[in-house]
Image (cartoon, rainbow, N blue to C red; front, side, top):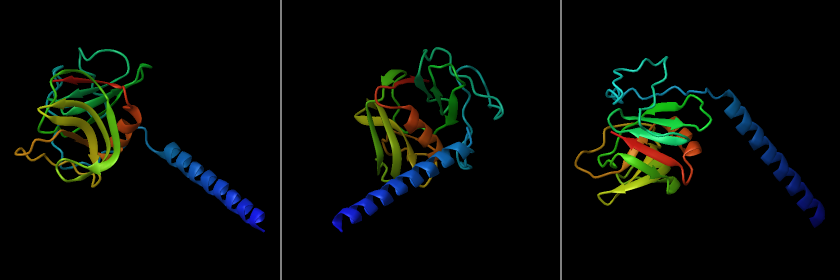
Length: 186
């Protein structure tokens, strides 16, 4: 009898895994290529160093000149924007972010650490943390607040969390694995 019970359990496990796999595929197949951003409280991005004023949402925002080549994450502190640049030459995914109070110096960095979920240095639950720099003793990285808001950081606190929406955090998490190049521009 024990043998048939374990066979039933194994069969149910296989069926459950197949169902989860199918639902995951179905969700990814129906997800929009460029998710809508539900961030009414985030400010408009500042002009980018390339001289572009307000970006037309129908047109992609150009990757800043001088940000390197190949696969990389480009983070513009002044434009409050990130680009996920694929080496294959596809149009990069770009989205606005809320910079932290501590900024890394312009230059090239590497993703050195990632954490799925944690409480941020500001006491807020965050997910998809991608760390790439340390400055003034503060670790700097990209993350999304679990509550999906993008408030201005408290200027009285030294924090390194560059925040984005949860959908953009999902994209960052999938793209910026350990060793991925991160280029910071002004």
